[in-house]
Amino acid sequence: MAKHGAFTFILHSHLPYVLSHGRWPHGMDWLSEAATECYIPILRMLEELVAAGIRPKLTLGLTPVLCEQLSDPVFVEEFTDYLEMKIETAQLNVAQFAQRGDEHLSSLAQMWVKFYRDVARDFVERWNQDLITAFKKLQDAGHIEVITCAATHGYLPLLSRDTAVNAQIRQGVASYRRHFGKDPVGIWLPECAYRPAYNWANPIEPNAPVVPRKGLEEFLAHYGLRFFVIDSHLLSGGKAIGVYLARFEGLQRIWDQYQESRPSGKIERTDHSAYTLHWVSSKQPEAQPVAALPRDPRTGLQVWSGEWGYPGDGNYLDFHKKHFPGGHRYWRVTSPKADLGEKLEYYPETIEDRIHENAMHFAGLVRQIIHEEKGNSPTIFAPFDTELFGHWWFEGPLWLREVLKEIDRAPEVDLMTGADYVRSIEEAKVVQLPEGSWGEGGFHYIWLNDATRWTWPYVYDAEEKMETAVVNLGENRDSSIQRLLRQLGRELLLLESSDWQFLISTLSAADYAEKRILGHAHDFEFLHDILQRVAHGDEVGDDAWMRVEEIEKRDVLFPDINPLWWHPRELKF
Image (cartoon, rainbow, N blue to C red):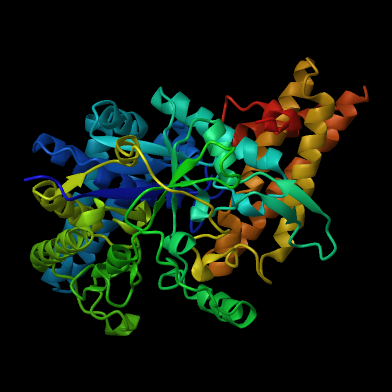
C-alpha cells in the first residue's frame, strides 16, 4: 500500500549548566534526575525498538550545553553518587513500610530499588558511562537523527546584538560537530522562538533607537542548518496553545498579566497548512530559505494537556506527591484536579493496559489526520520536551515505544526524521513568519515581564562589552588576553540562558535563577576588568589570577569556543 503521509516525532532535551553550581534542591540533582528518568529510559527504549527490527526514526534534540554536561567526568562521578543515594533511600523505604505492615507500599519501594539498580547497571555495563556516544551510535546507524540548539539555550529574539545570536548558533554547531562527528542538519530554536529580519528596538529602553537585525533563518542558512521547529500559530495564525501553563502554577499569574496587556486578536489563516513543509525567508527571494516544521496542535494537545491529555490518566504515577527520605513516588494521579491529600496509591499492574490504549488512540489520531489530509501528502510534526517523558510522565517512554511500534506497522504512514522529510521535498512555499514562540500567548512574555525585566540590562551590557572587547582585542595574540576572552565568552553564554527568566516566571526555582544571573554577570564584569588591565599593561596580582582559574574550573564547557564569533565582520552573509 502506498504511503499517504508521514509522521515525525521531535524531542527536545535540555537542562541549563548546573555542574558545580549546587546540588539539591537546585543544581546537579536536576541533571541526574533527568538522566535517570528521561534520557536513559528513552535510550533504552530506542535500542529495544532497533533490536526488534524497527527503525524509530526519532528526531532527538540534545542541546549543546546538555551534551557538554553529560560528557563531563564530573557528571559521571555525581551521577553514580546520586544513584547510590536513591537506592539506599528506597531500601530504607522498603524497611519502613514493611515494619508498619504495608506490603503494597513496601513492594513499590522495592520497585524503585530495582529501577535505580537497572539504571546504574546499564549506565556502566551497557553504555560505558557515555550516553552521548550511545545516542551517536544510533544516529550513525540511521535509526535516529540528533539535532542541535543554540549553545546555552539563549532566547534569541530578545538578545540585543546579532553578534550574540551568531555566537550562540555557531557554538551550537561547533559543539555538535565535536560530539557527533558531523554537521547538524536541524536545530531546535530555544522555546521555538523565532524573529524575522526587521528594524529592532531594545525592549527595555522606551526611547531606544531602532537597528536593522537579521532574521534568525539567515544565521541558520549560513551555518548549513536546513530546518527548525515552530509553533503552528506562527504559520496559520490563531491562538498559541502554550506548553507550560498546566505544569507551573506560577505561570498563571504571568498569563493573567499577559492577557490584560496583550489581548488576542489574531485572525486564523487557512492558506498555510500545518501538515506540510514551508520554507522561511525574511528577505524573499534573496536569502536562502530554511524549512520550518510546525507543531501539530491536535496530536500535541493529547500529550501536553494536563486535564485531558494522556499523562492526566488517573492510573499513572503522580509527579508531585513524594515520600521522604528519598523523594520516591508511591501515588497515582487519581484525578488531574485532586490535591496531594486525595492521591491514591499507585498500582503498576494497571499501567500496561493504559499505555496500550493511549498509544492506540494516538496512533489512530495520526492515521485519521493523514486520511483527512491525504490529498496533500501530509506530514505530522509532533515536537515535545523530552523531560515530559519519564520525568513529568513516568510511563512516557513506554508510551513512546508503543506509539512508534504502532505507527511503524501502519501501512499508510511513513516514520521519518526531520532531515529525511526535508530532503524528500522538492518544492514548497516560501513564507514570511511573524515573531513569536511556543510559550503562553505565543510571544516572549514568559521571558520578558515585570518579574524578569531587571535581568535583561545585565545581559545587554555584557553583550555590548563582549563585542567591543573582541573588536579591540580579538586578534591580539597575547595568550592571557585570549584566555580571558574565551572565559568571558563562556560567562556571557551562560548569562544568556533562557532558563533563568523561565525559572523566575514559573516560580519553580526563582532564587536559584536570580543567583545564577547575578553570579555570571558579576564574573563577567570581573573578567572584563582583568582583561582591560592586561590589555593596558597594568599589573594583575596572583589573587586575581587565582580567581580567574576558579571560574575556569567551574565553567569548563565549550573547549572550542572562539571569541571572534562575536566580531561584527562575522555577520557579512
